[in-house]
Length: 555
Image: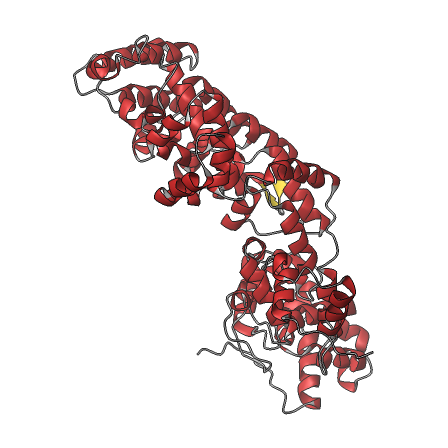
């Protein structure tokens, strides 16, 4: 029998393995034996190449196992997966029988903004709209309402009900700013047909009962509402919020007022009775001052119940106190606590306990791509550079992008020197030759994490001496060799230039160090903070032609 393997496009196979091509591209009539034969041939190590990368392709075909908590949530997500494929399939799911598939596609084509909305968010918002009794015809008349997040939609409906508008139109929900900017004297004329009572009177009652504002403040609000024809609902609304925040933090009322004027009104659009809970969490649980709120006003947009649960269950996220993460990325506090727990459990499964929280992290945590990310983490965890990738600020960017992980795998499998994760995932030039580069952020972060030092302290030391000429994996190996030999972190930092050398050279030098005459008495040298300078001298003496840069090369 001939050993000839049928012709097959190996690029399609690799794309399938990485999830970049549809399985239907394979001829379904091929037998399992033929496919196995093709796989065996394709992943057979080529001459001069490492076999473990070929084995990695095999491993990507194995089923992915999730932690119990993640698995349970993934099953819940999968039940909705059949209609979350696209915006028009979500629309058809919630408003069955209202239009054909072609009509739904045309609607999305004529309203491209809806494509920018996360599918899970669009699904949730449309479910709320339908549960409130609105028809598809009403949605078509005000399609912008589909751009609101579920929280924005719910809060606006609650506030309108707070204003005695029990059945607001979708137009009013989305353009609620028109009601807030309406002069109080013109309310009955412009909105009388949907108002059942005076919304300003409702606001004043809420300020007294829900915010417990003192009588002089409430009298000032009443006087403001009757002052002239230019006073709007927004003026009275912000007046009471301003005085309440000044009481709670405490802060000067004028300072609070000037700060609120610079914040988008949409952040405040919620019933007044929710503000005590928000302030309780910000002050008692997160210990924020008003100056910090002024720097990050979106902290006023949190869900107090969910935020309290997050702070209680996750005091530290990625090695950083939750207070610092929330201050930099307040949208984290809008992610449901149980959803956040599933993501952290998945990361812990691959020993990703300390990580750099970035905007990409928030975006990923807002999604429900557990199974896909689990598979990507499994593949990445088998790379030699995984320990560096795991603490890099590029980790979540790589996990979010099929292209980034594909480029990283291609670079690694081809034997190219990966001197920078940024270059690797952006298909920038690499070669098999050494390249002098400045120290990259992922190396600084990895060294700081390994030595348990501040990133700023490590960056200051490494910026002058480190270039990763043999790639980031080599730098990791050299650092591990030095620590395993018994050198302290202070000695490693003092001799940081050794991180530029090839791991094999450093390993051989360490094996011979104890017997070298230059290192005698050896016990005393091991206590010397500059012993690695001696090691560098010995290496240079043995290999005179070896490059040993000691200062930054500027290009």
